[in-house]
Image (cartoon, rainbow, N blue to C red; front, side, top):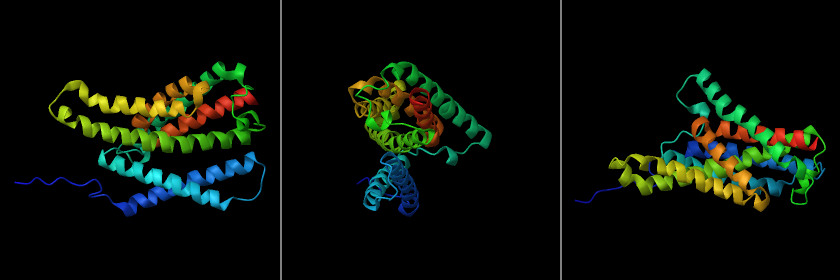
Length: 238
């Protein structure tokens, strides 16, 4: 007797996921374009760059949504089946408070090196709170969509598939392995893209943001990331 296994995309409501992916991708692309216009002090929108970013981030979001569906993981806090006061509490505990703590920590660690040549020019060129707002918003939205929403979710799905036989047999600690290793792998990549200068603090921040994503949803991770950068930029460069 042949046992049939569901293929990867079976049961996926692509029409629904495409709408969500397009909305998130368009948001990320617009934020990118606005930040670039502000950084380079130009008034015109680069439509080609906007379309390229839209296709990139929408594709990332679509993949992330499919992986989340396959793991029965609810990535969005707003869609979780809990009360609104509890959602607010989760946003506070995993978004607002960690973001403030990380921002102050960044400032204490990096303030003496704020004008180092290793710091990106766009950061050293900060002149106003509007600059810090846009830079923080771009980093929070784009990096959380890629590193937490896509990569962490994908690693979690893959590792859960690999360790499913052991999990099904009741080996206690194995149920934590997909979570722990997906957290470590996504944080490692997050650290690497920040270079040797910022690797360790970015790696540790990635761990914290990954936990925020798992426990408080994508919204909490974005809020924490935004506040961390916003506090750091304002305290350090203004």
